[in-house]
Amino acid sequence: MSSSPDATTADATAGGTARRPQAERSQETRLRILDAAVELLVEGGYTRTNTLAIQAKAGVSRGRLLHQFPSKEELLVAAAHHVWARQGEGGGRAPLPTEPAARIDAVVEGLWKSFNEPVFWAATELWVASRTEPALAEVIRPAERRLGREIWASLDALFGPELSAHPLYPVVRHTLFTSMRGVALAYAFDQRDPTTEPSLNSWKQLAKEILLTK
Image (cartoon, rainbow, N blue to C red; front, side, top):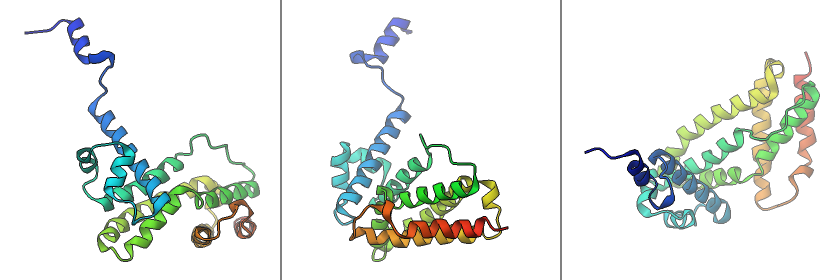
């Protein structure tokens, strides 16, 4: 028995609202859960971020949460990386300067800014917690390796082919990243304006003296 087009449309728009595809609704639920998890990690730390709190903040059922993320460890790692991925998309980012010295300044400033945003603190909570939670560490290790490769590729694109072709560029990239990460940790107990960080000019100078030297 076939139905008329009007009947089909009526079924698809019950209550006056068309039902969205299951995959779209599932993705929206996933993003709500991830956003809620990151907010809780930043607000209260790892110990206060449990699945019940995430479920309540995201406004989803227990079943929906467990369907998306069977374990707390997988959920929290995915949450931290989800925010970094959104930031890495660079939506609305102003074009970088083409002049090499100005480009280095802009990239260094942008990289330092990323260490003062919620995703860094969410990731830091996970790193610290994994020291005493082997199950979490098992999830974090491969995820961090993948994320590291994505970060390097993103930085390479930001610096551009000319600067990243310098023989010492990998050393500069690694030094900037690890140095900034170490300095940023002090902001956990000494909150101040990151744009006034004394090391910022040193990082710019270091990068320019190496990358602009033939």
